[in-house]
Image (cartoon, rainbow, N blue to C red; front, side, top):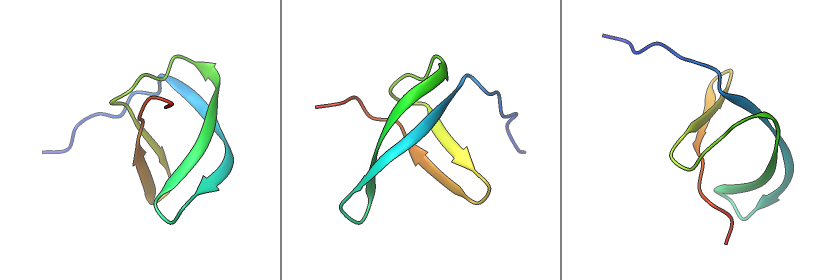
Length: 50
């Protein structure tokens, strides 16, 4: 069973941090830690800024 995808906001990638992380900013809506950002076949878990 596949879960429904609901858009809650949009992010803009600012830079790549190492091989597995990106730095981004929220440009629309409300994105919270624990949300998953997806585009095409790529997905990443949203973590709070340090």
